[in-house]
Length: 135
Image (cartoon, rainbow, N blue to C red; front, side, top):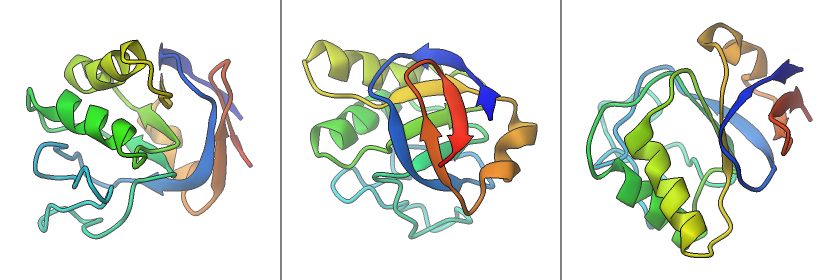
């Protein structure tokens, strides 16, 4: 169990952990229609982020990342929750705008990258108070 810093409040989430081993660009790196990692150079190419607790060691900047995340929310293909090592204001803006649109959004929290591996291969729950536990 780890108490995480809440970056963007949202719906508590539960799902299989997807611990990315490399940073990702949502723009061109994630298909907003399927929730699949589309970047052929990414180590987890082909994995689906939808409905999973997504552990992000970092992001590759693009001003369009927020739009892709917002599309994922709108299409029902968003992760169950996002766990970031470092906040990414542009990416998180997608959750904030989706929430302002009245859409149910997953929450985003920050944890130290060193604990990400403890969740690999597990079911994970992110509570509304930011507590991250193995489900």
